[in-house]
Image 1 (tube, one colour):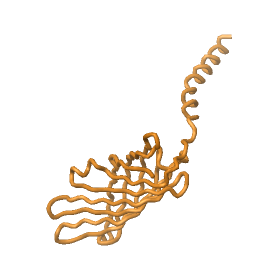
Image 2 (cartoon, helix red, strand yellow; image 1 turned 180 degrees about the horizontal axis):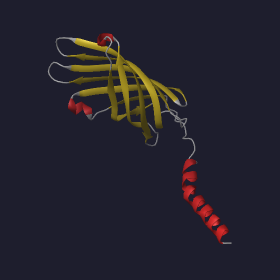
Image 3 (cartoon, rainbow, N blue to C red; image 1 turned 120 degrees about the horizontal axis):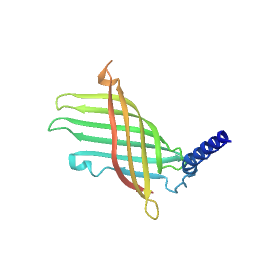
Image 4 (tube, one colour; image 1 turned 120 degrees about the vertical axis):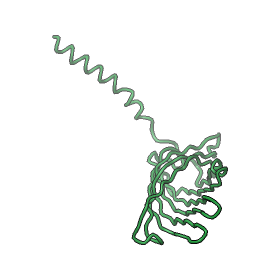
Length: 173
């Protein structure tokens, strides 16, 4: 009799312990938004002399294609610039809202005032986006990633550049 009580107690404890996980897992799929495009940038980094902007277009309920560009003045003579195309997949079936992951390919350039170095890059990104407001048109996005530089002026050398979307703010339309 004592053995059965221990098994029953263990079973009940396990059911109670796992029930919040089960309930949380049933959140469901996010409702897709009618917007098909987003334009965004980071206004905070403009204060540091850095510019970035992105254009993203929905190509399926869960997928977007886009282009991004950035420029940073490192000092009086040194500049960094890049232009990349990207593909983002939103597994919750609602582009522009929630978690995403994807890939990117682009061209990266550093100019030191005397010489210019250009390389090609392939990378991966993960992030999270929100659409806020009554019409869900106010866009906020954050993310991180890494891009492997290869070819171009690097020759046989290669390197990795981190990509950090601290906070992009924009509009969905």
